[in-house]
Image (cartoon, rainbow, N blue to C red; front, side, top):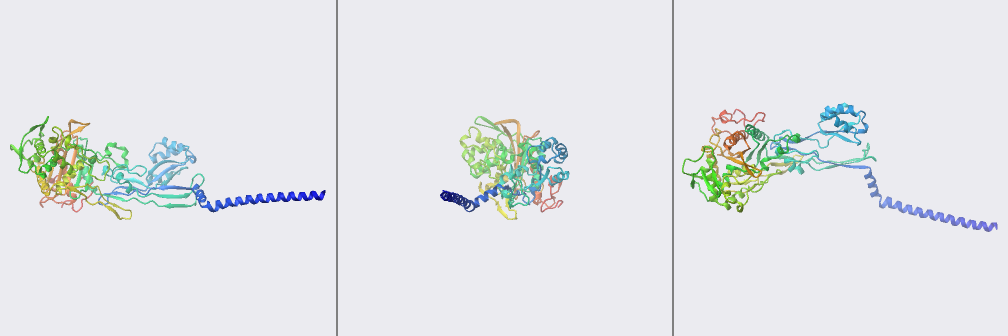
Length: 602
């Protein structure tokens, strides 16, 4: 029995051993298969996934490009800056720390203490502070409070209010919010980079861990057509006249007629881009391009263009010199400005322009006719935006001939019943000055890469011929007669030939004309014997006086003298100094930089 039992026991042991062996072999085979899958087939993907769990990837914006004037003077640039932050868990005495930080950060201690006692692991106390402020915080040596460099730096506008409505401003996230900063945001902000670094389970960087930096690309520099000095002068002039007449607001434009370049575009009130939130949002607007207004008598040159260039009126044609005329259901009067007639029973187109007669302009418009008048309005581009590279531009409100009922054609003849922007009107006068070519207004001259290479140049862009050169010459002669014996005869600049047109128009508010509210304006061309510059001055709602000849024309003269001084254009008579007080005035405003190409006192 015993040997038989022993044999059975051996068989069971062998079977058991075989089961265990093959079970272990099967498990080992499965493990090997899984190991193959993990290590070979899925190894790279799993390794990458594991790496991702211990890496952080941070996008970094590129440093913003500069905005400079035509000579490289900066309007907007970036300066090194720092961020002040706290890790609340490490702060020992929040109340004491807040009291020490408050005067350095120029913040309320209560607000700082709230951040120091936050439940968050990390809180910014203040961002984009100067390096001096950051150094002062570091000297306090407060546990849990630290500083770090801001990758983008602090956006600053060294010129302050000068050019603010053109340049615009940026937000805390480095995005342009207004002006050139907004219009050229994609160009200025460059291309983002990325930082990839090893982190622990809490997402904190591991000391001496792996770190890969893909550098951000600095944005391009935007070079404006604006001359910083002329911008300064234009803003000084328009500020002075607005304050003198306690006006609502005003704007001034200096345009190079042959190229369409804007040398100055000023608005007042304006704001400081370094602290734009301190000014009302209404001051951020570039009103010279955004706010259409009824131009009044400055529009008579559009009527004269349509009349002469179409051949429907000649220089020798005459119209009855009347003080009033009834058209449709309305009686049209001349302005009660003491210039009631040319002294004759009849008057020519030149007389109508020189003396700014509404009745005569209405008669001319009616002779020209609706369709022809409309065609020339469109030739001047007054029914659409000019295309200047600035945000928020409006087109004109001119209607169409089928909507010109009753007396509207007649009133359009003297600039009532149509609304256009100041820039549209300046461009129209530019066509008269350059011989009949309509130019697209340019505010940007070029884009320059960080390495100094010019990426793009904005060349002059003709947009079509508005009138013949002969018509342009005849209109220029009429504008000179405005100074010779018309509404601007009291305005002189010894040694210079002037041409221009006064404008006075009742303002529309909420769809209705407002009694006692006027826009006083003047558009001129200098020097008239060698036309180069168009200068526009517009003042809304002046108090005490409102005629363009009284409010805006003297401001035009002041600005024109400064433009000619800056551009080195001397008076024709050598005996008249450009600093002659009789020329009133020709030297720049106090605080302005020196002129190019001409010395004071020469």
